[in-house]
Picture 1 (cartoon, helix red, strand yellow):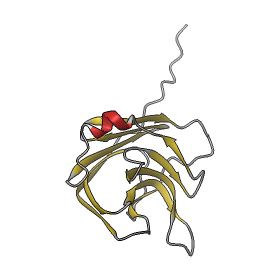
Picture 2 (picture 1 turned 60 degrees about the vertical axis):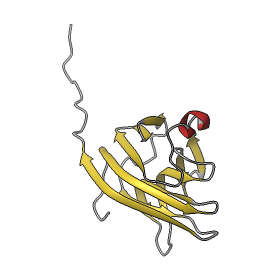
Picture 3 (picture 1 turned 90 degrees about the vertical axis):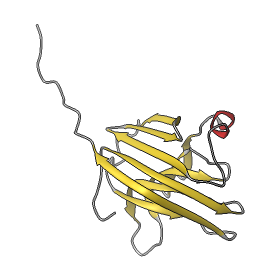
Length: 150
């Protein structure tokens, strides 16, 4: 996207094909200057990362991995699947085909909680990632209660 998002719910259908395919949806991300990569969160797709939350080009690690056996019961590896990414404040929830794969709260105060959204596929053996029916609903900022009761 060219627009930056902080609190939102993104819905997208995806289908991946190929050997060792590795793709994902980047969000709250920033483009790395003079590079093809972005830095930020990634809702992962493919290989051993299905439904995981990865921190791309920043901490370079999986932040949360789902229960692979439970996800396998709802995942359609060679067909269309639906991803839902819900980002509210420091909390991030990922769902594939109705199964919640991640419920993560960011503890690092230095990590930006806004950025662009990108569709992504890694290099490697021949593979393809398709995305369709993408919607982004911005969520209202959480209200901070400043009333003090005695």
